[in-house]
Image (cartoon, rainbow, N blue to C red; front, side):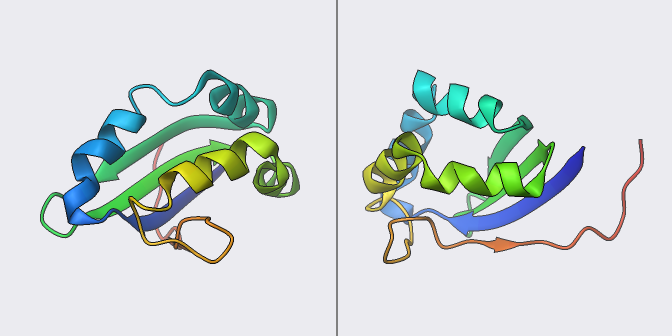
Length: 104
C-alpha cells in the first residue's frame, strides 16, 4: 500500500456543511474510490485554522490519478467548490505532504 497525506481547507462559514456532505459521501463516489484502489481514507479538520488533513492508502498511483477523470468525481468537486478553496477545474486546492516517519 502507498500512504498519502494531503492538506486542503474549508471556508470557515461552510465547515458544518462540509461535514454534513461527508456523512456519508455519495454511494457512487464511495464505490469509485474503492474501484480505484483507495483504502483507509480519513479527513481530519483543525477547528482553529480550518485546514483539512486527508490520509489515505492507495494500491497504485496511476490508478488513483484516474479518479479525477470520472464523472462522479467531477460532480463531487463541482458540488464542493463553494465550500472550500478550489482550482479552476473545481478540484480542491491541496498539497501533498512528504512522509518522514512511519511505524507499523
